[in-house]
Image (cartoon, rainbow, N blue to C red; front, side):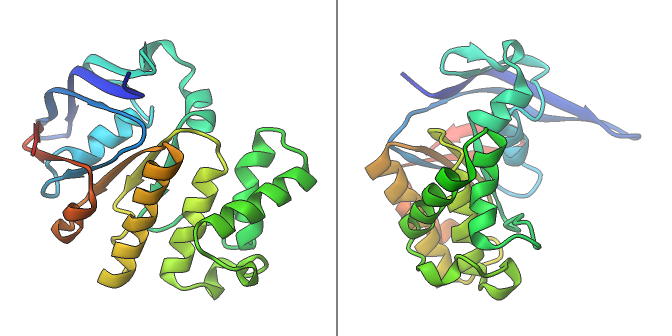
Length: 222
């Protein structure tokens, strides 16, 4: 059974001058244990699709189903806190918190006691191939690749099976980009996450299990 799927999803938004159909009758499903890519030109609709899967908005028509339940029927604030982890291009780490504190933060929001949150955060940071040396460093003291790994560790700390990554390698060099995607693929294959990556970097597609291409709001499986 898929962890998340889109059934006949349509979404349009209006500007002062026009109405844009961002998604046109999109149907697809995503399973745990695999890493997926959604590719397409800027403005093709891929980021809109990701935002609907993240529960940031609802489709105009059709349904986004999480474990078989439409996001229309979910508490979407709770869904975003507990059921979906998002990794961004610009990392979005808290600059005044250390790497360890950044990873502890989502657990503390869920009521995990500080001592236990600290223990788990240390394990998550190590699991993304970082050493204990980064624990007490602030984001400004880390390289871009290290910051993205901390962001991935923070996503893992949310204890969900669904990871959405919005251009996670957009600010990284090609070697670091491949290392980050390799890490996400390993998490999918070894820990049974469903990882969905929106990217414009075609050089990364050989590392994906499934690739979807978005063109003018229409989704194609490659």
